[in-house]
Length: 324
Image (cartoon, rainbow, N blue to C red):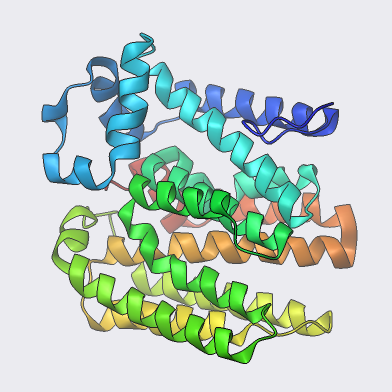
């Protein structure tokens, strides 16, 4: 079957998994309590700019202008939101393929608590994260920068501006693959400078727009979980005899504790960790598949479901929602 760049499908196996994910997201849209999506339904139905602050829409035009306008032109209304989730299914399949991860691992991916919470209640960030991860996977596959990768990075940022916090993490991983030390050092330095600069530039706006109460302060728990996943990822790299990307965990730890010290809202810190944990989870399952194969799929799903339904904090985020 000819490769389809739109949905990231190049064979029957990918098409089947894309279809299954699409059906799952469509059913989830209509039957799961989704606080964030409920807020956008009227906006997408009527394309009413008064629903949101104009300055926020201008900064994130992909979600607030491009998709709703597209839906309005074709008379899709809130169905556009379902199509966004289906589009994310294509990004998941394409990202896994580029990273060399079998499609069956899409099951642990969509049940991973952080990703589950995002597509259920933080749709804008969820789409932005998968655009970012797909852009990263392109570099991983090609081992070089490309125009397509750059376009997806820009689109990701214009979908949810908070994604900028994770860009240095991607740069760190990319430049660890470089054999030219000068390029590595430039990449590390520029990444940190850009991240810190943007944090100060967006400080007030980012806190104001990402400060809705999730019911309890989970920021420290989220930071600890993120660092734990970063260390687990590095341990797996070490066990496989690969280069240890120690700069990634150093940056993650530093930036998250910086946000804590700067007294950012708990929910803004939590959502910052979502991006990092999504990245680490993909890299972890890639290495687990390399070591153990398909046997890890049911194990990961069981662990995910236990965390989703047995831990009160995760359960609260699922059903009370996280608004941004």
